Length: 198
Length: 198
Image 1 (cartoon, chains in turn brown, yellow):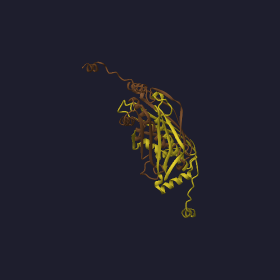
Image 2: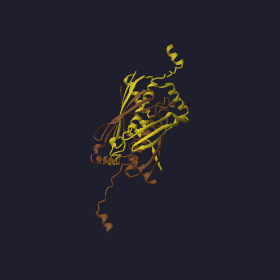
Image 3: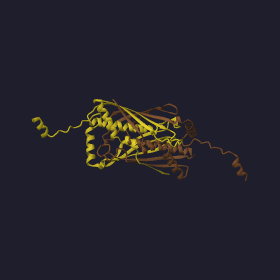
Image 4: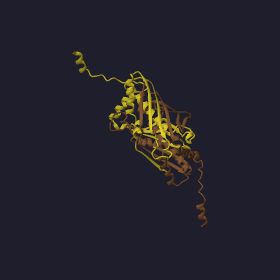
């Protein structure tokens, strides 16, 4: 019975999370605690600046954002190019805008999987994903009012390898979906305003 | 009255569109006609493959897609990197996933503006855009069930310069919005399925 008494009398020691999967798990937990205690620290604004180059070719610069109570700059201003492919009358100088939607979703879910696995003490060895988006161009070409402009649907398929049983790895993907900013945006839509100046 | 008779008897000459703004306008009109005559040519599928690198850092490759009745490859496999910034426990080795949503929207609308201006015979001199997305991280951090994971809203502001009156330039932006794949996706949401394999 003494073993039983011991489990009652000795307070449970909270396990300190270890860095794992390249994730600074202690910093991640500290961030969650900080936002729990000061919710205004969780208010972020991300920004981008686009510049038309020629035809359907353009460049976006992503350099500054606000959050955690202050202004921040990326290590350097990141740029991304986009274009239409030749079969769609572009010059194929970059991925298409809709492929960047696929990328944004892959990136958000992959980061979530790595963070959540680290938080749960699961060491990942690889995470790969294949994404597809179907689109009927009669929408954007103005040829049918019944056809929407965007993807009719998107499919994401992950292959996750790590030191946990299949069920646990699948739960991690499920939780990444439940906490994904981009999955929410593309699944549920958000209010967007567009203003034009000359 | 002879002038009136002439307008009745002589068939209207359809103005041939000229390439403009770096847009191959005749090819664009020919594409629209081709899809009008054979709607199945408008069926496209875009694809991306994601690979986790470490922490929240990942890389997406965009190389192949189908459409116009066949398989296509980009000139070369395009890659894009994403990461979380240091303030969000990442290593800031690339833009965040949500910044790529801003980029995708800027790219889609900018391409639309260039195409539509060319189709309407408007020569553009510059198109720049500023985008903002607001996000409360209590959603993705699991700290509030009332806060959504994604942007609460996005704002896009264009400055469009060209050889047309302000009203006509603004109409072009309006039409680009009405025909944008990415604006539809992020405004209205689409069905997304996520599958996990191990």
